[in-house]
Amino acid sequence: MPAPYTSSVASDDHRRAVDLSGAAVHLFRFNGPLELAYEYFCDIPAVFSLLPDVIEILAYGPNRYRLIVGATDGHGHAMAGYFDIAAVFEPFRAIRITPVDDGPLIDLTGFVFPGQLFAEAIFYPHAHGTDVEYNVELAMTIPVPKVLWFMPGHVLQAIGERAMEHKMNHMIGGFSRAIDTDFHAWLSTVRE
Image 1 (cartoon, rainbow, N blue to C red):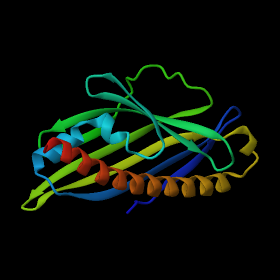
Image 2 (image 1 turned 30 degrees about the vertical axis):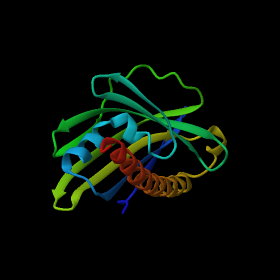
Image 3 (image 1 turned 90 degrees about the vertical axis):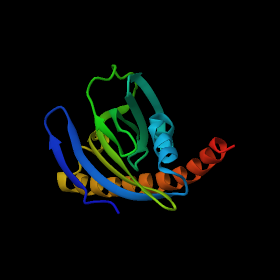
Image 4 (image 1 turned 180 degrees about the horizontal axis):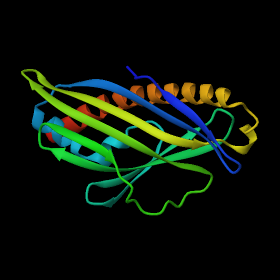
C-alpha cells in the first residue's frame, strides 16, 4: 500500500512549484526459481518500460539510465518528469535503484521537471518459487503552470497530494499487472 504523501509549495517572483513525494510496496510471487526471477529483474530497461506512462528509457552509461515519464496535471497541461538512476546489483539477493545527477542534458520541451527515484527489489526464494518485495519511492518538484499561479498555496498542496496519491496507485497497480504477465511470458520463452 502507498505510504503517506508529502508536499510543500515553494514560491518566489519567478517560479511556483510543488514538492511531492510518495512511496509504495508490492510483493510479487513468481512460479520460477530465484536465478530466473533475478535474471528477469536485471534487465532494467525492460522492467521499467512496464511502468504506466513511461515515454522512454535511455541507457547513458554502465548501469545508468534515464527514465522519462509523462503526466498531465488534470487541467490539460502535458508534463514529463525524468529520473536519472543507477542500478546496483547484489547477485541473487537484491537490486537497488538510486538517483544520480550525472545524466546528459535534457532535451525536452514543455513542462519538464527532474525527479528522484529510489527502488529496491529483495528476492526471497522458497520451495514453490520466488517472492520479490519491491519498494519504490518518488520525489519531485513540479513547476506550477502560470495559469494556476492565482491559486492559494494550500489549494496547490492539496491538488499535488491527491495527484501524487493517484499517480502512485496507478503506477504500482499497472506495474504489478504488467510484470506478472510479462514475467510469465518471458519465463515460457526461457524454458523452451
